[in-house]
Amino acid sequence: MHQLNGIPPQPTLTAATTRLSTSRTLPLETHDLGTFDDLVDLVSGGGVVVLSGAGLSTESGIPDYRGPDGTRRVEPMTYGEFAGSPEARRRYWARSYIGWQRFNAAEPNEGHRVVTDLQAAGYVGPIITQNVDGLHQASGATDVIELHGSLDRAVCLTCGEYTSRIGLHQRMTEANPGFMERFAEAARTVGSQWGEQVRPDGDIVLADALVDSFHAPRCLVCGNDTVKPDVVFFGESVPKALVEQCFSIVEGAGAVLVLGSSLSVMSGYRFVRRAHQRGVPVAIVTRSATRGDAQATLRLHAPLGPTLEDLRCSLTF
Image (cartoon, rainbow, N blue to C red; front, side, top):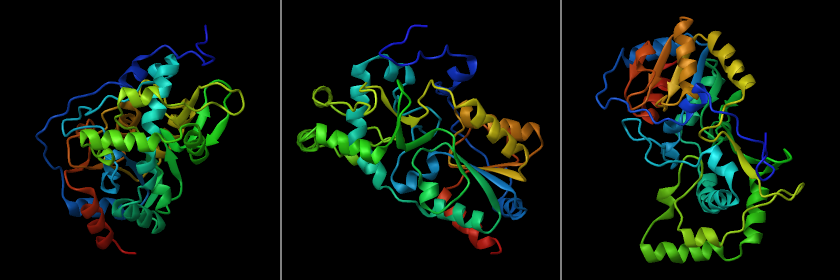
């Protein structure tokens, strides 16, 4: 197959990968299934695998993509767009250059710390996270599986070279002197607060005129502009080996605890389905409805931070 700009061709979308980029509307009316005491009993049995989503990081100042009905508030750049043109890559990196600075400054919230404490106490085992923010690890958690990758790294789609995001940011700063100042001036003109526009992948809304002036990063090894954050974009597949590893973990779990995910995309929802098929109890704690509600053994529509704090207080350490 023909390679565009040195980038390996995007695989033909299958039904599975198509679902990754589909926004699924969820019901606004929600009902609890079980009680908080039931959650305490479930977690107290140990062997819990946590599946976390963007809702766990909102209290750290990182907004999620979706509204209460599961519909995306914004449309993220897809893999096909990113791989398809230098203009799209420049647009992504210009927006991400600014957004990542706020994203990178985020710190773990109490929800992350409770999960870490539950893991240290032996109640929670592996953590499968759909988030790319590294906040589980920053809170001290171990055995964290990053289902969608991490913004801490970048990879060249042409030669496969990896680089740290911090180093990449420094290179972009050197290649774009005065860019932050121009952005700040533009933000003052329109009265916007850029910190409120940061998305879960560190992206941000940015005017076209600023995008056009930005110099996108190039790979230090092959010189191409095909550097991509080491995360799974919408329309891109999670590596099969990683999916199989997560399936194995879920099948051997005492329970699966979903925190802050609408499960609207198959990449996370499939683990809830597998747990349900294997008779593994599934508890879901998040404010809005989720795609996995029908497979849940226990369902609480509650704020994560306070609920998890109460859970920690209710368990024996």
